[in-house]
Image 1 (cartoon, helix red, strand yellow):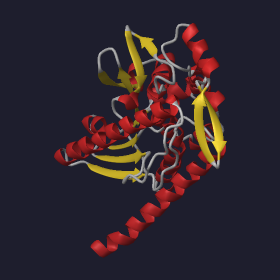
Image 2: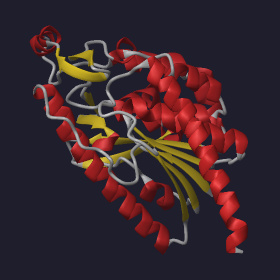
Image 3: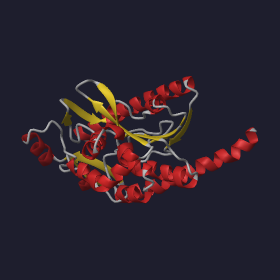
Image 4: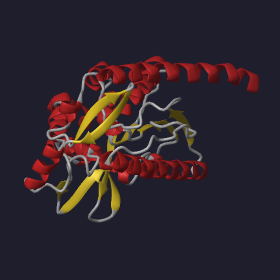
Length: 303
């Protein structure tokens, strides 16, 4: 049983899409299980449907307005670097309306339903492939995995949306008496879950470099500080998930194929830039091609 696991990473998901495109269209890998966290959860339904061009178009055309119904920050480009500042009016408006978060992401929920149709959902649900998204249950302090087999169209679209809600910048959702947020807060790379569900070979796309190449610039304001803190925490979570995944794989005779980003794509994955995301998609595809070409050259020498 082969699985594709895609980590969280916001706008960097475009790179993952390019890698997945090469694996599926050029290497002809077929997957029984698709498992994603955050941005990974946005990709997996369309990958399972083999509708790669459709999800590529969506990923390379979104901007801040496509995601946020109330964006809590401003984006400014100085000396070629994007920096974020607080949108005081939007934040105050959100608090005035009784929200617990700085911003709202209801536009993303609409986009998910526009991109994944009822007919496509029905096709997936009737098919043999399992699609699973990761969410964080803040009320019960646990990570939960939501399979397409267990929900109807409206509910599953909502779980995809919840998996992507990077609180406190995006919507905190109350559902079934519990508060839910981005799956990456609990499990950025759900390799262990894929193996628990029976995967014997797992292709894992991780939206960060294998070795740290990052020296963050000093924080300019409270928001940039918060994003730096959250990115630091998520990096630690991701590293732990990878170590656990390797451990579980060793004890279950499972094979893991890792695809890390070769360079730091961005220091703020909440900035959605069409031009950059288009370039990242092609970069992911080219990287997967280069990596597999190198592996094919090495294998005969080993034998």
